[in-house]
Length: 566
Ligand SMILES: Nc1ncnc2c1ncn2[C@@H]1O[C@H](COP(=O)(O)OP(=O)(O)OP(=O)(O)O)[C@@H](O)[C@H]1O
Image (cartoon, rainbow, N blue to C red; front, top):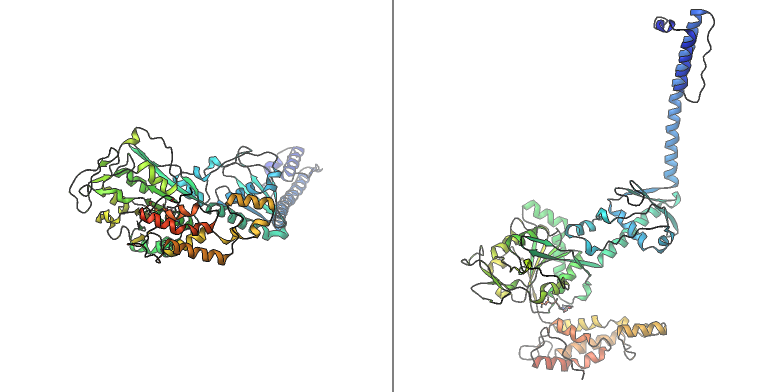
Protein backbone atom coordinates (compact mmCIF):
# COMPACT_ATOMS: atom_id res chain seq x y z
CA UNK A 1 0.00 0.00 0.00
CA UNK A 2 2.84 2.28 0.96
CA UNK A 3 4.47 1.53 -2.39
CA UNK A 4 1.34 2.51 -4.13
CA UNK A 5 1.30 5.64 -2.17
CA UNK A 6 4.96 6.26 -3.04
CA UNK A 7 4.26 9.15 -5.43
CA UNK A 8 1.98 10.63 -2.86
CA UNK A 9 4.75 10.39 -0.30
CA UNK A 10 6.87 12.58 -2.50
CA UNK A 11 4.36 15.34 -2.13
CA UNK A 12 4.41 17.87 0.54
CA UNK A 13 2.31 16.49 3.40
CA UNK A 14 0.12 19.55 3.90
CA UNK A 15 -0.54 19.84 0.12
CA UNK A 16 -1.49 16.20 0.02
CA UNK A 17 -3.91 16.49 2.92
CA UNK A 18 -5.39 19.64 1.51
CA UNK A 19 -6.07 17.91 -1.83
CA UNK A 20 -7.58 14.91 -0.04
CA UNK A 21 -9.86 17.20 1.97
CA UNK A 22 -10.99 18.89 -1.23
CA UNK A 23 -11.67 15.54 -2.90
CA UNK A 24 -13.75 14.32 0.04
CA UNK A 25 -15.71 17.54 0.16
CA UNK A 26 -16.44 17.18 -3.53
CA UNK A 27 -17.56 13.54 -3.17
CA UNK A 28 -19.82 14.32 -0.26
CA UNK A 29 -21.11 17.81 -0.65
CA UNK A 30 -22.42 19.38 2.49
CA UNK A 31 -19.81 17.68 4.68
CA UNK A 32 -16.64 19.37 5.81
CA UNK A 33 -13.66 17.08 5.80
CA UNK A 34 -10.60 18.78 7.12
CA UNK A 35 -7.72 16.30 7.48
CA UNK A 36 -5.22 17.25 10.14
CA UNK A 37 -1.52 17.32 9.33
CA UNK A 38 0.01 14.36 11.17
CA UNK A 39 3.05 15.05 13.21
CA UNK A 40 5.96 12.59 12.86
CA UNK A 41 7.17 12.52 9.22
CA UNK A 42 6.54 9.38 7.06
CA UNK A 43 4.93 7.40 9.83
CA UNK A 44 2.63 10.32 10.31
CA UNK A 45 2.06 10.40 6.54
CA UNK A 46 1.10 6.71 6.53
CA UNK A 47 -1.34 7.36 9.34
CA UNK A 48 -2.81 10.27 7.45
CA UNK A 49 -3.09 8.13 4.31
CA UNK A 50 -5.01 5.41 6.13
CA UNK A 51 -7.21 8.07 7.71
CA UNK A 52 -7.81 9.43 4.21
CA UNK A 53 -8.74 5.99 2.86
CA UNK A 54 -11.11 5.45 5.76
CA UNK A 55 -12.74 8.79 5.03
CA UNK A 56 -12.92 8.03 1.34
CA UNK A 57 -14.64 4.70 1.92
CA UNK A 58 -17.09 6.29 4.32
CA UNK A 59 -17.71 9.11 1.87
CA UNK A 60 -18.42 6.68 -0.97
CA UNK A 61 -20.77 4.66 1.24
CA UNK A 62 -22.42 7.85 2.34
CA UNK A 63 -22.90 8.87 -1.30
CA UNK A 64 -24.51 5.54 -2.12
CA UNK A 65 -26.83 5.71 0.84
CA UNK A 66 -27.75 9.26 -0.02
CA UNK A 67 -28.49 8.31 -3.61
CA UNK A 68 -30.67 5.36 -2.60
CA UNK A 69 -32.47 7.45 -0.03
CA UNK A 70 -33.25 9.97 -2.73
CA UNK A 71 -34.55 7.28 -5.06
CA UNK A 72 -36.70 5.69 -2.38
CA UNK A 73 -38.06 9.09 -1.48
CA UNK A 74 -38.93 9.78 -5.12
CA UNK A 75 -40.58 6.36 -5.50
CA UNK A 76 -42.62 6.78 -2.33
CA UNK A 77 -43.62 10.29 -3.40
CA UNK A 78 -44.59 9.00 -6.85
CA UNK A 79 -46.61 6.15 -5.38
CA UNK A 80 -48.29 8.42 -2.87
CA UNK A 81 -49.04 10.92 -5.59
CA UNK A 82 -50.58 8.18 -7.71
CA UNK A 83 -52.68 6.94 -4.85
CA UNK A 84 -53.78 10.36 -3.75
CA UNK A 85 -54.17 11.92 -7.20
CA UNK A 86 -54.72 9.29 -9.90
CA UNK A 87 -54.04 10.84 -13.29
CA UNK A 88 -54.81 9.96 -16.87
CA UNK A 89 -52.31 11.21 -19.43
CA UNK A 90 -53.68 11.65 -22.92
CA UNK A 91 -51.55 12.39 -25.92
CA UNK A 92 -52.76 15.06 -28.25
CA UNK A 93 -52.76 12.57 -31.08
CA UNK A 94 -55.17 10.30 -29.21
CA UNK A 95 -58.87 10.48 -29.89
CA UNK A 96 -59.64 10.83 -26.18
CA UNK A 97 -58.04 14.24 -26.38
CA UNK A 98 -60.84 15.43 -28.62
CA UNK A 99 -63.55 13.90 -26.45
CA UNK A 100 -62.38 15.83 -23.41
CA UNK A 101 -61.93 19.06 -25.33
CA UNK A 102 -65.37 18.74 -26.80
CA UNK A 103 -66.80 18.07 -23.34
CA UNK A 104 -65.10 21.13 -21.90
CA UNK A 105 -66.32 23.28 -24.75
CA UNK A 106 -69.91 22.32 -23.92
CA UNK A 107 -69.63 22.66 -20.12
CA UNK A 108 -70.75 26.13 -18.93
CA UNK A 109 -68.86 25.70 -15.63
CA UNK A 110 -65.66 25.25 -17.56
CA UNK A 111 -66.39 28.34 -19.60
CA UNK A 112 -66.81 30.36 -16.41
CA UNK A 113 -63.36 29.39 -15.24
CA UNK A 114 -61.55 30.49 -18.32
CA UNK A 115 -59.41 33.55 -17.67
CA UNK A 116 -58.31 33.73 -21.21
CA UNK A 117 -59.26 31.60 -24.16
CA UNK A 118 -58.60 30.95 -27.78
CA UNK A 119 -61.44 30.16 -30.09
CA UNK A 120 -61.13 27.35 -32.55
CA UNK A 121 -63.95 26.50 -34.92
CA UNK A 122 -63.73 23.06 -36.37
CA UNK A 123 -66.75 22.28 -38.48
CA UNK A 124 -66.86 18.83 -39.84
CA UNK A 125 -67.94 20.34 -43.11
CA UNK A 126 -64.40 21.69 -43.34
CA UNK A 127 -62.92 18.24 -43.12
CA UNK A 128 -61.56 17.09 -46.41
CA UNK A 129 -61.85 13.64 -47.89
CA UNK A 130 -59.39 11.67 -45.84
CA UNK A 131 -59.66 13.83 -42.78
CA UNK A 132 -63.23 12.92 -42.25
CA UNK A 133 -62.36 9.35 -41.48
CA UNK A 134 -59.48 10.50 -39.37
CA UNK A 135 -62.00 12.67 -37.62
CA UNK A 136 -63.95 9.58 -36.76
CA UNK A 137 -60.90 7.91 -35.35
CA UNK A 138 -60.19 11.06 -33.45
CA UNK A 139 -57.25 12.59 -35.28
CA UNK A 140 -57.59 16.18 -36.26
CA UNK A 141 -55.61 18.54 -38.34
CA UNK A 142 -52.99 19.95 -35.99
CA UNK A 143 -53.53 23.42 -37.32
CA UNK A 144 -57.02 23.43 -35.90
CA UNK A 145 -56.12 22.51 -32.35
CA UNK A 146 -55.94 25.22 -29.79
CA UNK A 147 -55.11 24.68 -26.19
CA UNK A 148 -55.41 26.54 -22.99
CA UNK A 149 -52.59 26.48 -20.55
CA UNK A 150 -54.75 26.51 -17.50
CA UNK A 151 -55.87 23.97 -14.95
CA UNK A 152 -59.61 23.55 -15.39
CA UNK A 153 -61.73 22.13 -12.60
CA UNK A 154 -64.72 20.03 -13.57
CA UNK A 155 -67.43 18.80 -11.25
CA UNK A 156 -68.53 15.46 -12.61
CA UNK A 157 -71.18 13.41 -10.78
CA UNK A 158 -70.17 14.96 -7.47
CA UNK A 159 -66.44 14.33 -8.01
CA UNK A 160 -63.71 16.83 -8.72
CA UNK A 161 -61.61 16.45 -11.81
CA UNK A 162 -58.76 18.69 -12.89
CA UNK A 163 -57.73 18.97 -16.50
CA UNK A 164 -54.50 20.57 -17.56
CA UNK A 165 -52.20 20.57 -20.52
CA UNK A 166 -48.52 19.93 -20.38
CA UNK A 167 -47.26 22.46 -22.85
CA UNK A 168 -44.36 22.08 -25.14
CA UNK A 169 -43.34 25.03 -27.23
CA UNK A 170 -45.19 28.27 -26.99
CA UNK A 171 -47.60 28.72 -24.10
CA UNK A 172 -50.82 28.80 -26.12
CA UNK A 173 -50.36 26.34 -28.91
CA UNK A 174 -49.18 22.94 -27.94
CA UNK A 175 -48.40 20.38 -30.58
CA UNK A 176 -47.66 16.86 -29.52
CA UNK A 177 -48.51 17.87 -25.96
CA UNK A 178 -50.22 15.86 -23.27
CA UNK A 179 -53.43 16.43 -21.40
CA UNK A 180 -53.48 15.47 -17.72
CA UNK A 181 -56.76 14.56 -16.07
CA UNK A 182 -56.47 14.21 -12.32
CA UNK A 183 -58.87 13.40 -9.55
CA UNK A 184 -58.72 12.51 -5.87
CA UNK A 185 -57.63 9.02 -4.86
CA UNK A 186 -60.92 8.04 -3.28
CA UNK A 187 -62.78 9.08 -6.45
CA UNK A 188 -60.63 7.10 -8.83
CA UNK A 189 -63.68 5.58 -10.53
CA UNK A 190 -64.67 9.11 -11.63
CA UNK A 191 -61.79 9.23 -14.13
CA UNK A 192 -62.97 6.23 -16.07
CA UNK A 193 -66.57 7.27 -15.86
CA UNK A 194 -65.77 10.84 -17.00
CA UNK A 195 -63.82 9.61 -20.02
CA UNK A 196 -66.62 7.21 -20.93
CA UNK A 197 -69.15 10.05 -20.75
CA UNK A 198 -66.94 12.36 -22.83
CA UNK A 199 -66.57 9.60 -25.41
CA UNK A 200 -70.31 8.98 -25.56
CA UNK A 201 -71.11 12.69 -25.87
CA UNK A 202 -68.53 13.15 -28.61
CA UNK A 203 -69.83 10.35 -30.78
CA UNK A 204 -73.48 11.16 -30.10
CA UNK A 205 -72.81 14.53 -31.70
CA UNK A 206 -71.16 12.90 -34.69
CA UNK A 207 -74.10 10.58 -35.13
CA UNK A 208 -76.40 13.51 -35.70
CA UNK A 209 -74.73 14.53 -38.90
CA UNK A 210 -74.08 13.09 -42.30
CA UNK A 211 -71.31 14.13 -44.65
CA UNK A 212 -71.85 14.16 -48.37
CA UNK A 213 -68.98 14.61 -50.78
CA UNK A 214 -69.29 15.88 -54.32
CA UNK A 215 -66.60 15.89 -56.90
CA UNK A 216 -65.31 18.68 -59.03
CA UNK A 217 -63.63 18.10 -62.38
CA UNK A 218 -61.88 20.38 -64.75
CA UNK A 219 -59.15 20.29 -67.38
CA UNK A 220 -56.66 17.73 -66.14
CA UNK A 221 -57.88 17.49 -62.59
CA UNK A 222 -60.62 16.07 -60.45
CA UNK A 223 -61.03 16.13 -56.72
CA UNK A 224 -63.47 15.65 -53.91
CA UNK A 225 -64.74 18.94 -52.62
CA UNK A 226 -65.26 19.83 -48.97
CA UNK A 227 -68.20 17.80 -47.78
CA UNK A 228 -71.65 19.15 -47.17
CA UNK A 229 -72.91 18.43 -43.70
CA UNK A 230 -76.53 17.45 -43.31
CA UNK A 231 -78.54 16.31 -40.30
CA UNK A 232 -78.78 12.55 -40.17
CA UNK A 233 -81.92 11.06 -41.65
CA UNK A 234 -83.74 9.22 -38.86
CA UNK A 235 -84.16 5.57 -39.67
CA UNK A 236 -87.75 5.66 -38.49
CA UNK A 237 -88.61 8.36 -41.04
CA UNK A 238 -88.15 5.95 -43.93
CA UNK A 239 -91.28 3.96 -44.54
CA UNK A 240 -90.24 1.06 -46.63
CA UNK A 241 -90.83 -2.65 -46.02
CA UNK A 242 -87.44 -3.59 -47.48
CA UNK A 243 -85.34 -1.27 -45.38
CA UNK A 244 -84.55 -3.73 -42.57
CA UNK A 245 -83.28 -6.59 -44.77
CA UNK A 246 -81.11 -4.11 -46.69
CA UNK A 247 -79.68 -2.71 -43.47
CA UNK A 248 -78.91 -6.19 -42.19
CA UNK A 249 -77.21 -7.10 -45.44
CA UNK A 250 -75.01 -4.00 -45.27
CA UNK A 251 -74.17 -4.55 -41.61
CA UNK A 252 -73.06 -8.05 -42.40
CA UNK A 253 -70.99 -6.85 -45.33
CA UNK A 254 -69.23 -4.23 -43.19
CA UNK A 255 -68.45 -6.60 -40.33
CA UNK A 256 -64.85 -7.61 -39.66
CA UNK A 257 -65.78 -11.24 -40.10
CA UNK A 258 -67.01 -10.61 -43.62
CA UNK A 259 -63.99 -8.52 -44.46
CA UNK A 260 -61.69 -11.36 -43.35
CA UNK A 261 -63.77 -13.81 -45.35
CA UNK A 262 -63.30 -11.81 -48.54
CA UNK A 263 -59.59 -11.32 -47.85
CA UNK A 264 -59.03 -15.04 -47.25
CA UNK A 265 -60.54 -15.88 -50.62
CA UNK A 266 -58.93 -13.06 -52.53
CA UNK A 267 -62.27 -11.57 -53.51
CA UNK A 268 -62.52 -7.77 -53.64
CA UNK A 269 -64.42 -6.64 -50.59
CA UNK A 270 -67.17 -4.49 -52.05
CA UNK A 271 -70.85 -4.84 -52.62
CA UNK A 272 -73.05 -3.25 -55.22
CA UNK A 273 -76.72 -2.38 -54.79
CA UNK A 274 -79.03 -1.30 -57.57
CA UNK A 275 -81.99 0.76 -56.35
CA UNK A 276 -84.46 0.88 -59.18
CA UNK A 277 -88.04 1.93 -59.59
CA UNK A 278 -90.54 4.74 -59.42
CA UNK A 279 -89.41 8.31 -58.98
CA UNK A 280 -90.13 9.70 -55.54
CA UNK A 281 -90.36 6.23 -54.00
CA UNK A 282 -87.50 6.77 -51.59
CA UNK A 283 -84.29 5.62 -53.30
CA UNK A 284 -82.23 8.62 -52.28
CA UNK A 285 -83.99 8.80 -48.95
CA UNK A 286 -83.00 5.23 -48.17
CA UNK A 287 -79.37 5.94 -49.11
CA UNK A 288 -79.17 8.86 -46.66
CA UNK A 289 -80.94 6.89 -43.94
CA UNK A 290 -78.59 3.93 -44.39
CA UNK A 291 -75.54 6.20 -44.32
CA UNK A 292 -76.85 7.87 -41.17
CA UNK A 293 -77.61 4.59 -39.50
CA UNK A 294 -74.29 2.96 -40.43
CA UNK A 295 -72.35 6.19 -39.91
CA UNK A 296 -70.89 6.19 -43.38
CA UNK A 297 -70.07 9.16 -45.54
CA UNK A 298 -71.61 9.41 -48.98
CA UNK A 299 -69.52 10.09 -52.08
CA UNK A 300 -71.77 11.16 -54.92
CA UNK A 301 -70.28 10.39 -58.31
CA UNK A 302 -71.84 12.22 -61.22
CA UNK A 303 -70.64 10.36 -64.26
CA UNK A 304 -72.23 12.94 -66.48
CA UNK A 305 -70.54 15.85 -64.80
CA UNK A 306 -68.86 18.25 -67.17
CA UNK A 307 -65.16 17.63 -67.53
CA UNK A 308 -65.41 13.97 -66.46
CA UNK A 309 -63.46 11.23 -68.25
CA UNK A 310 -62.41 7.64 -67.56
CA UNK A 311 -59.22 8.54 -65.73
CA UNK A 312 -60.91 11.06 -63.52
CA UNK A 313 -63.68 8.63 -62.76
CA UNK A 314 -61.12 6.03 -61.68
CA UNK A 315 -59.32 8.59 -59.60
CA UNK A 316 -62.50 9.57 -57.81
CA UNK A 317 -63.28 5.95 -56.99
CA UNK A 318 -59.74 5.49 -55.77
CA UNK A 319 -59.93 8.51 -53.51
CA UNK A 320 -63.14 7.54 -51.77
CA UNK A 321 -62.49 6.52 -48.20
CA UNK A 322 -62.92 2.89 -47.24
CA UNK A 323 -66.15 2.11 -45.46
CA UNK A 324 -68.23 4.70 -47.18
CA UNK A 325 -71.10 4.73 -49.63
CA UNK A 326 -70.34 5.56 -53.25
CA UNK A 327 -73.52 6.72 -54.91
CA UNK A 328 -74.00 6.67 -58.65
CA UNK A 329 -77.28 8.49 -59.10
CA UNK A 330 -79.47 8.06 -62.13
CA UNK A 331 -77.15 5.61 -63.76
CA UNK A 332 -79.66 5.19 -66.61
CA UNK A 333 -78.44 8.49 -67.98
CA UNK A 334 -75.81 6.41 -69.69
CA UNK A 335 -77.40 5.22 -72.88
CA UNK A 336 -75.88 3.04 -75.47
CA UNK A 337 -75.38 5.19 -78.55
CA UNK A 338 -77.37 2.80 -80.65
CA UNK A 339 -80.29 2.87 -78.21
CA UNK A 340 -80.77 6.60 -77.89
CA UNK A 341 -79.18 9.74 -79.15
CA UNK A 342 -79.46 12.95 -77.27
CA UNK A 343 -78.44 15.94 -79.24
CA UNK A 344 -78.84 18.65 -76.68
CA UNK A 345 -75.97 21.06 -76.40
CA UNK A 346 -75.20 19.71 -72.97
CA UNK A 347 -74.88 16.14 -74.18
CA UNK A 348 -71.83 14.45 -75.47
CA UNK A 349 -71.02 11.28 -77.29
CA UNK A 350 -68.32 8.94 -76.15
CA UNK A 351 -65.93 7.23 -78.55
CA UNK A 352 -67.94 5.24 -81.04
CA UNK A 353 -66.86 1.68 -81.35
CA UNK A 354 -68.73 -1.55 -81.59
CA UNK A 355 -70.91 -2.23 -78.60
CA UNK A 356 -70.50 -5.62 -77.00
CA UNK A 357 -69.03 -6.56 -73.69
CA UNK A 358 -68.80 -2.95 -72.75
CA UNK A 359 -65.06 -2.74 -73.25
CA UNK A 360 -65.30 0.47 -75.20
CA UNK A 361 -68.99 0.94 -75.73
CA UNK A 362 -69.96 4.39 -76.98
CA UNK A 363 -72.32 6.39 -74.80
CA UNK A 364 -74.37 9.46 -74.73
CA UNK A 365 -74.12 11.10 -71.38
CA UNK A 366 -76.87 13.50 -70.49
CA UNK A 367 -75.73 15.86 -67.80
CA UNK A 368 -78.14 16.34 -64.90
CA UNK A 369 -80.51 19.25 -65.28
CA UNK A 370 -79.85 22.11 -62.92
CA UNK A 371 -77.56 20.02 -60.76
CA UNK A 372 -80.40 17.72 -59.81
CA UNK A 373 -78.16 14.77 -59.06
CA UNK A 374 -76.53 16.69 -56.26
CA UNK A 375 -79.74 18.32 -55.20
CA UNK A 376 -81.41 14.98 -54.81
CA UNK A 377 -78.96 13.75 -52.28
CA UNK A 378 -78.04 16.81 -50.33
CA UNK A 379 -79.12 20.03 -51.82
CA UNK A 380 -75.88 19.90 -53.77
CA UNK A 381 -73.17 22.46 -54.05
CA UNK A 382 -75.64 25.14 -55.07
CA UNK A 383 -74.36 28.18 -56.75
CA UNK A 384 -71.06 26.57 -57.57
CA UNK A 385 -69.20 28.62 -60.02
CA UNK A 386 -68.77 26.90 -63.32
CA UNK A 387 -65.49 27.82 -64.87
CA UNK A 388 -64.86 27.55 -68.57
CA UNK A 389 -62.74 24.48 -67.90
CA UNK A 390 -65.61 22.76 -66.15
CA UNK A 391 -67.89 23.20 -69.14
CA UNK A 392 -65.99 20.49 -70.99
CA UNK A 393 -68.53 17.72 -71.55
CA UNK A 394 -68.22 14.32 -69.91
CA UNK A 395 -66.53 11.69 -72.05
CA UNK A 396 -66.82 8.67 -69.80
CA UNK A 397 -66.99 5.36 -71.63
CA UNK A 398 -68.67 2.21 -70.42
CA UNK A 399 -65.34 0.44 -70.15
CA UNK A 400 -64.09 3.32 -68.02
CA UNK A 401 -67.10 3.01 -65.76
CA UNK A 402 -66.82 -0.76 -65.53
CA UNK A 403 -63.11 -0.48 -64.75
CA UNK A 404 -63.83 2.02 -62.05
CA UNK A 405 -66.49 -0.22 -60.55
CA UNK A 406 -64.70 -3.53 -60.53
CA UNK A 407 -61.23 -2.87 -61.80
CA UNK A 408 -58.14 -3.06 -59.66
CA UNK A 409 -58.40 0.61 -58.89
CA UNK A 410 -61.80 0.40 -57.26
CA UNK A 411 -61.95 1.11 -53.59
CA UNK A 412 -62.27 -1.88 -51.28
CA UNK A 413 -64.66 -2.06 -48.35
CA UNK A 414 -67.09 0.35 -49.95
CA UNK A 415 -70.76 0.05 -50.63
CA UNK A 416 -71.63 1.03 -54.14
CA UNK A 417 -75.21 2.10 -54.74
CA UNK A 418 -76.53 2.95 -58.18
CA UNK A 419 -80.00 4.35 -58.56
CA UNK A 420 -82.17 4.43 -61.62
CA UNK A 421 -85.77 5.01 -62.59
CA UNK A 422 -85.28 2.97 -65.77
CA UNK A 423 -83.52 -0.33 -65.07
CA UNK A 424 -84.58 -1.58 -68.50
CA UNK A 425 -82.31 0.97 -70.13
CA UNK A 426 -79.19 -0.24 -68.40
CA UNK A 427 -76.49 -1.94 -70.40
CA UNK A 428 -76.32 -5.66 -69.56
CA UNK A 429 -72.58 -5.28 -68.96
CA UNK A 430 -73.37 -2.91 -66.14
CA UNK A 431 -75.86 -5.14 -64.40
CA UNK A 432 -73.83 -8.31 -64.86
CA UNK A 433 -73.57 -10.48 -61.73
CA UNK A 434 -70.77 -9.37 -59.46
CA UNK A 435 -71.30 -5.68 -60.07
CA UNK A 436 -74.67 -5.04 -58.47
CA UNK A 437 -75.42 -8.12 -56.44
CA UNK A 438 -78.41 -6.73 -54.63
CA UNK A 439 -81.25 -5.27 -56.63
CA UNK A 440 -83.90 -3.42 -54.71
CA UNK A 441 -87.16 -2.51 -56.44
CA UNK A 442 -88.94 0.68 -55.37
CA UNK A 443 -92.64 0.89 -56.03
CA UNK A 444 -95.27 3.53 -55.67
CA UNK A 445 -96.76 3.75 -52.21
CA UNK A 446 -98.84 0.94 -50.75
CA UNK A 447 -101.87 1.44 -48.47
CA UNK A 448 -99.75 0.34 -45.53
CA UNK A 449 -97.06 2.90 -46.37
CA UNK A 450 -99.77 5.58 -46.58
CA UNK A 451 -100.99 4.63 -43.10
CA UNK A 452 -97.47 4.63 -41.64
CA UNK A 453 -96.54 7.92 -43.30
CA UNK A 454 -99.65 9.49 -41.80
CA UNK A 455 -98.69 8.26 -38.33
CA UNK A 456 -95.16 9.51 -38.86
CA UNK A 457 -96.49 12.94 -39.76
CA UNK A 458 -98.87 13.10 -36.83
CA UNK A 459 -97.26 11.56 -33.74
CA UNK A 460 -99.53 11.29 -30.71
CA UNK A 461 -97.31 13.44 -28.47
CA UNK A 462 -97.99 16.46 -30.70
CA UNK A 463 -101.70 16.16 -30.08
CA UNK A 464 -101.87 15.45 -26.37
CA UNK A 465 -103.87 17.82 -24.21
CA UNK A 466 -100.94 18.40 -21.81
CA UNK A 467 -98.75 19.28 -24.76
CA UNK A 468 -100.81 22.44 -25.00
CA UNK A 469 -101.55 23.34 -21.40
CA UNK A 470 -98.20 23.04 -19.56
CA UNK A 471 -97.48 26.69 -19.72
CA UNK A 472 -99.82 29.06 -21.52
CA UNK A 473 -97.04 31.02 -23.13
CA UNK A 474 -94.91 28.13 -24.22
CA UNK A 475 -97.89 26.13 -25.42
CA UNK A 476 -98.94 29.00 -27.61
CA UNK A 477 -95.46 29.07 -29.05
CA UNK A 478 -95.51 25.34 -29.52
CA UNK A 479 -98.83 25.52 -31.25
CA UNK A 480 -97.71 28.30 -33.49
CA UNK A 481 -94.48 26.51 -34.28
CA UNK A 482 -95.94 23.15 -34.97
CA UNK A 483 -99.07 24.51 -36.61
CA UNK A 484 -101.29 22.34 -34.42
CA UNK A 485 -104.71 23.82 -33.96
CA UNK A 486 -106.45 23.80 -30.59
CA UNK A 487 -109.24 21.64 -31.94
CA UNK A 488 -106.83 18.80 -32.69
CA UNK A 489 -106.39 17.04 -29.40
CA UNK A 490 -106.10 13.43 -30.32
CA UNK A 491 -105.01 10.27 -28.61
CA UNK A 492 -103.18 7.37 -30.20
CA UNK A 493 -106.34 5.37 -30.88
CA UNK A 494 -107.93 8.29 -32.73
CA UNK A 495 -104.78 8.88 -34.76
CA UNK A 496 -104.64 5.18 -35.63
CA UNK A 497 -108.15 5.28 -36.94
CA UNK A 498 -107.49 8.51 -38.87
CA UNK A 499 -104.41 6.88 -40.41
CA UNK A 500 -106.50 3.93 -41.56
CA UNK A 501 -109.13 6.30 -42.93
CA UNK A 502 -106.46 8.23 -44.81
CA UNK A 503 -105.07 5.08 -46.36
CA UNK A 504 -108.55 3.92 -47.41
CA UNK A 505 -109.33 7.33 -48.90
CA UNK A 506 -106.21 7.28 -51.05
CA UNK A 507 -106.57 3.60 -51.92
CA UNK A 508 -110.33 3.02 -52.07
CA UNK A 509 -109.90 -0.55 -53.29
CA UNK A 510 -107.11 -1.46 -50.98
CA UNK A 511 -104.43 -0.51 -53.42
CA UNK A 512 -106.22 -1.82 -56.50
CA UNK A 513 -108.23 1.30 -57.37
CA UNK A 514 -108.43 2.65 -60.92
CA UNK A 515 -107.65 0.69 -64.03
CA UNK A 516 -104.10 -0.03 -63.06
CA UNK A 517 -104.59 0.60 -59.38
CA UNK A 518 -103.91 3.85 -57.61
CA UNK A 519 -100.27 4.76 -57.97
CA UNK A 520 -99.08 7.37 -55.57
CA UNK A 521 -95.47 8.25 -55.04
CA UNK A 522 -94.40 8.58 -51.42
CA UNK A 523 -92.95 11.94 -52.37
CA UNK A 524 -96.31 13.29 -53.53
CA UNK A 525 -98.10 11.90 -50.49
CA UNK A 526 -95.54 13.64 -48.32
CA UNK A 527 -96.11 16.88 -50.22
CA UNK A 528 -99.88 16.53 -49.73
CA UNK A 529 -99.61 15.88 -46.00
CA UNK A 530 -97.29 18.82 -45.53
CA UNK A 531 -100.28 21.04 -46.17
CA UNK A 532 -102.13 19.64 -43.19
CA UNK A 533 -99.65 19.98 -40.37
CA UNK A 534 -102.49 21.88 -38.69
CA UNK A 535 -105.06 19.18 -38.88
CA UNK A 536 -104.82 15.47 -39.50
CA UNK A 537 -108.61 15.37 -39.73
CA UNK A 538 -108.57 17.74 -42.68
CA UNK A 539 -105.84 15.67 -44.30
CA UNK A 540 -108.17 12.69 -44.15
CA UNK A 541 -111.28 14.50 -45.29
CA UNK A 542 -109.64 15.85 -48.45
CA UNK A 543 -107.55 12.78 -49.26
CA UNK A 544 -110.11 10.99 -51.42
CA UNK A 545 -110.72 14.07 -53.53
CA UNK A 546 -106.99 14.64 -53.89
CA UNK A 547 -106.42 11.05 -54.95
CA UNK A 548 -109.31 11.14 -57.46
CA UNK A 549 -108.36 14.43 -59.07
CA UNK A 550 -104.73 13.45 -59.18
CA UNK A 551 -105.58 10.12 -60.73
CA UNK A 552 -107.70 11.78 -63.42
CA UNK A 553 -104.88 14.07 -64.31
CA UNK A 554 -102.42 11.21 -64.08
CA UNK A 555 -100.38 13.28 -61.74
CA UNK A 556 -100.01 11.03 -58.79
CA UNK A 557 -96.44 10.10 -59.42
CA UNK A 558 -94.01 12.58 -58.01
CA UNK A 559 -96.54 15.39 -58.39
CA UNK A 560 -96.50 18.56 -56.39
CA UNK A 561 -99.35 19.26 -54.01
CA UNK A 562 -102.64 19.36 -55.83
CA UNK A 563 -104.99 20.56 -53.16
CA UNK A 564 -106.80 23.70 -54.15
CA UNK A 565 -107.48 25.79 -51.08
CA UNK A 566 -109.46 28.43 -52.93
N1 LIG B 1 -90.36 5.40 -48.43
C1 LIG B 1 -90.33 6.67 -48.02
N2 LIG B 1 -90.44 6.97 -46.72
C2 LIG B 1 -90.45 8.23 -46.31
N3 LIG B 1 -90.33 9.30 -47.13
C3 LIG B 1 -90.23 9.06 -48.43
C4 LIG B 1 -90.21 7.74 -48.94
N4 LIG B 1 -90.09 7.82 -50.26
C5 LIG B 1 -90.00 9.11 -50.58
N5 LIG B 1 -90.07 9.87 -49.49
C6 LIG B 1 -90.02 11.33 -49.46
O1 LIG B 1 -90.14 11.78 -50.79
C7 LIG B 1 -89.12 12.70 -51.14
C8 LIG B 1 -88.40 12.24 -52.40
O2 LIG B 1 -87.83 10.96 -52.17
P1 LIG B 1 -86.50 10.46 -52.88
O3 LIG B 1 -85.72 11.61 -53.41
O4 LIG B 1 -85.82 9.54 -51.96
O5 LIG B 1 -87.08 9.65 -54.09
P2 LIG B 1 -86.27 8.93 -55.25
O6 LIG B 1 -86.84 7.56 -55.37
O7 LIG B 1 -84.83 9.03 -55.00
O8 LIG B 1 -86.69 9.82 -56.46
P3 LIG B 1 -85.90 10.04 -57.84
O9 LIG B 1 -85.83 8.74 -58.51
O10 LIG B 1 -86.76 11.02 -58.56
O11 LIG B 1 -84.57 10.59 -57.46
C9 LIG B 1 -88.22 12.82 -49.96
O12 LIG B 1 -88.38 14.10 -49.41
C10 LIG B 1 -88.67 11.78 -48.97
O13 LIG B 1 -88.78 12.36 -47.67
